[in-house]
Length: 358
Image (cartoon, rainbow, N blue to C red; front, side, top):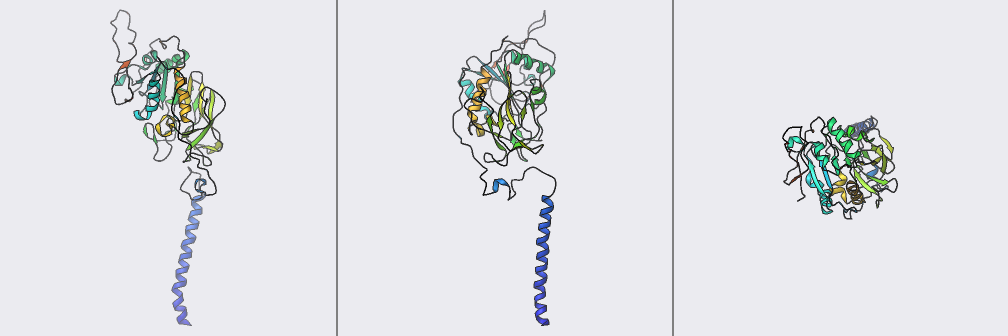
């Protein structure tokens, strides 16, 4: 009897310790799950995206061609790189190619620090101006010039994105740093009655292959939504103000507030349109769902304005262009010289660099 007990004791002790270990794991798991809310963890086995009973991932079709309906002959579209980081020129190939194939001239505003023209000088010969997530502030003179430009009929397209979409996120300008909106874009949009929300949008219930790839649909029939049924945005930020053209689908969540709702991602205020994502122009996302139709409509918007006077903004105000980045490549410039002071010899300023797509 005692011999059997001595032989069974190690087995009992081993079972006891195994039970304690399992209990510790369970308690630790409960403790971790009971803490404060955090960003959605898609590695959790019970996350909706991994629940075999819920088909939440609905990949969008990738098809179509990027095209324009409007004749862009004689129009000049200026893309601002003086206030942005290092923009990947290849990412803009579809945008530039389509504009130039339809007769437009595309120029890059590189700023005075890159031996280019001041912003207001670049705007005088432009019909449209595109800003892709500016990281350098605009001076008061530049802000006034942009207001005069749009008031005269010049078209402005503002695209912005959250500074951080994921721990290892990559935006159009390279590594992403924080989850707040790039600050120079806030005052730029606000002067047109538009604004951005902080954080990024995601949807754990309906998305395109990744919960940060949210769907958006038109709010009505407008020039911007013609032919658009559903679009896809990657880690977009919400936009407010003006007339909302597209909103995300239901149960979309804003990372900053964790509030589920429908959020505007494209809005228009007169001659200005703002988009809460820069990736919609890139090769990776351009042909998903009806993105190429949306982008084509945005390009039509850029070249259908009627600027009068044609050389607006006309007055040169004090202030310097912000520091800028530049793109690799060669090309020819455009635009005119700054007005000279009375009784002085006019000195031509270098023009902004034109980067034809290779």
